[in-house]
Image (cartoon, rainbow, N blue to C red; front, side):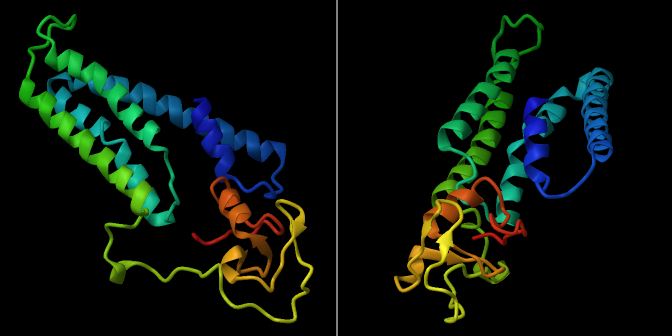
Length: 216
């Protein structure tokens, strides 16, 4: 639940100006939805215990939404490889014990074929995430299908002051140097390339005016 709260807080603009009542209403809806889905899932699994394997296969598709989100947002190295491999391996432990161990406490008939199928399915998801980490979130999408990306190193108005400061690191930006050393947002604010890239790893909004930023 703490992880969901962190996601909810990160996706809300910090300058939304909402009052405490609105925030409390949103939190109540979040808690209600979480516990409703949890209880509903337990009841569904109890009623459909004869279809446990298809349900487990659906439950272990949890990397697919992350893969799709990476493609849509064009996220830059969204998850660390150690996290991907670790989460995949640890979450496989319980179903492999239940369906692979002949002396499991649930007395489920073991099935090596099912274990191999589940490992292959999870491994394929993990491989796609690793490819997205090393080669880009859209590495497997044909270039013709991709939307045009905003160029953060585009040309800018030459009338801009040469003594522009980066509000992230609070140091001056030399606009006479290579354009690859600094980035220009759609709202015409300037930042060092490294500063803005690290900022966008956390928030996709302009550090100066808080407007939404397109993927880099």
